[in-house]
Image 1 (cartoon, each protein chain N blue to C red):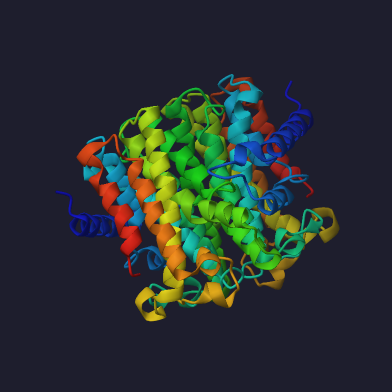
Image 2 (cartoon, each protein chain N blue to C red):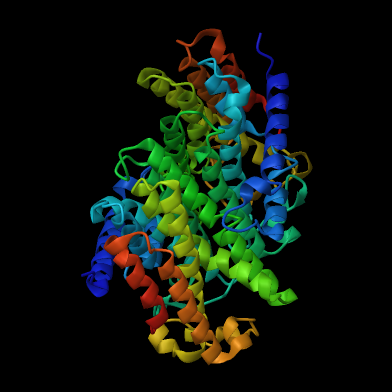
Length: 300
Length: 300
């Protein structure tokens, strides 16, 4: 019987320990020793916080193919570092201009803007260093596929492209199709990459990879729907960041279009869609099933 | 007989064409189509300009092992994209706050700060996508070594760490050793990675890789010395960017310490050191020799 709370807590602990160890200096060295201030800012922006859902998805997808938890850790760390870099840059004054993240000062508030830009750059860069190292997986062919997956998921046709579209939409307005594309890229792409990276670690055949991609795309939409709903219903205190921002900015979220009940009905249907994509996998996919359900019930 | 002008012009043309093709959209796609505005900003920050010295070093190092020019193109594009991303981010108001680059508006001037941050992020991300694609090299083991080399050269113990140290030094002052470390990381690390990536493409054995690393480290110092000298002697018009900034900021460059003649003597000695490291390679290393000489004689 899969225990979501235990597995997600274990994953969060392992990621926290893994990142803290990686970001302690030795493995960050290049031609020179890593700069202390950028290390401190990288740690501030990536340690002590976050639900580590993306590494959990890597681990859960890999578990379908009997990959041990530890063997999915490095890839999970890489995805989490990309997620954390994107938060650091998104929080900058030129972007969302947020002072709080997970209840603590954002990196540019705790340090300064230049340091936050560089810390984000370094987290992104080292995500690829982690995937390239033999500790990630024995087979170079697997590691290079992970690099490709993470790069395309987080690049101009993925996460960064979604963030760009979001900024553009704030000034020029969105159609419904444009919202869907933007959200699929901004938050969906990295969730999709996480699941696919787990599948790649497990040596998934094309058919299994395709089913898991369908799961991931629906799960990503569910995650975004839950986020839009929480932006309306949750308090800033519970979320550890500002809420109500979407409405204040006049953002065309699904909640604004369908109302709260309509958005909740769509969320449940989307979770069902994600779970349906897993039908061929049996109990080893219980982790991914539980995460999809979690997306529908989370309160922060 | 190696012709530096012809080879460097050919390399610049190939890189320009390769980047323009890559940045036209199709290969940038991820889960969604790349956002037009970020593509435009990536193009602004990477096309029509620059001497493309880093891809030239990749090509010249690879040539020692008889790697054809075309086979070094993708790796050269990746290094150049990392170089261009670093310029975009360094030019931001929170960093060097430059309005001009290569005689044109910097990316945040031509677009806006948020777009410049995202365009830099995307260029960095896609540099790794290029190295991960089979078009870069048939052998996954070679491609993953290129990823590792570029990531460590441009990360917290390389280029980004050097930029961080440079910013810190502006407020707290530097010792001579700290200047050397900062410069070896800020500009040296990517030059070193370029040469080593060419060697990796060529299947260099450890001894050859070590000799080429020694060349690259000396060449990097020569490049920086030439830059410091040009900051004093060249006009803003010739350089296409602001000059005299080092002195205005009270930066402890070698020119400030040794005077112009002392710095020129050190530049010549450093070029000699770089060329000495190539002694075992014969005429196939004439490209790298010519580039080291070029560093001593360049006027912009």
